[in-house]
Length: 456
Image 1 (spheres, rainbow, N blue to C red):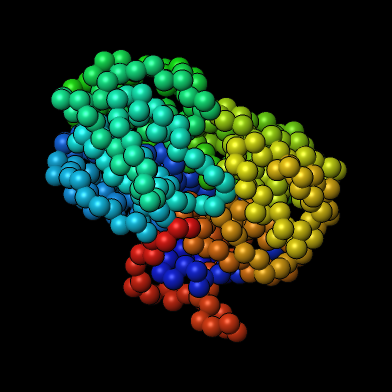
Image 2: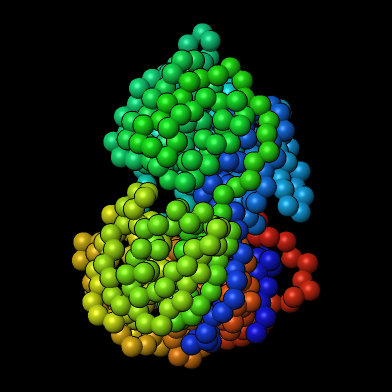
């Protein structure tokens, strides 16, 4: 079957129909990293000059961030393979609550706005409902840099009270290695006066990508990828061209899908060491992994149960916990999967059990007894990564499954079902006209990407 994922209007009324137990074979092109692209778009606010980004994925979350930038006065020029950004006319304004509340990454704008304009006003961020994900580390760090923060009625007001309207360098020790807080503070400190040292910083590749681009722009940042980052503030940042790193989570999701279907595929481009923890677990589970340059090939003939515990990079990524749980549900033996990052990231367990899995959850830990086969069901993905897990489960199941929740899936995966279809999966996206009727999407439709900016 053929699918078309570019048509994303009315996502809540679209389903995926998946006929399972098809072997996958071929090559998948990995898109640019969603989590890197979002913070790089926010970092564009730090310069008045043109910034050109290559390899930005076409996702609903990216569209939301573009809309936020445009509301702030940023000019965006979109071409086939790059995005040109100019923030010369950046100004303060009240951002639409529904837009900001629906995208957690919108809060990244607070650091650039504060250090560039001397103040920022943002609604508290939203996003997938997978846990509290508090912003205390962001706020505490910005206060250490000299900001005055007021939180009132769901909004954050940040100002700089000193005469120069400049943040001041500081030594900041994060209570936990928060990715978002690390990124916010790096951007804020890049134009601050003096030196900032962030201890217990997050080490994720997306943070390294941010620091690499900022240094291209004239920033002085040292220690990216380490737990201690030093930023010497500069007076001005300049424009540059930058290519977004490949999405390690997308690549990992497809590798897990191949393992679950006992298939052989190759994903590229990738940066292999970004996936070390995932590749090690796939090998332990019985897959053969081959790395050549910027490509990873996987060949799986059987699945053995293994235990995982999510952890900050370079540990096993929380974003791949749900897909890996789907894999373990059909592994031979018993496995234990512990989620240590987000307290509500087990939304995929109930639908997996509905499909015939044998999983018990206690204290955010899943105890799994592998079964021989899952059965097709109509199921709903309740957040971005659980939606991907449901698709992987459906690919292994006997019969035809229906997957709802595509408003979550399309937040973080570009052309997900199309890429799977191209390597042998049997998937079609359908528009649910009413409670009793499904029909394939009109492939000639002129519908535009969704403009529904409610929280996903």
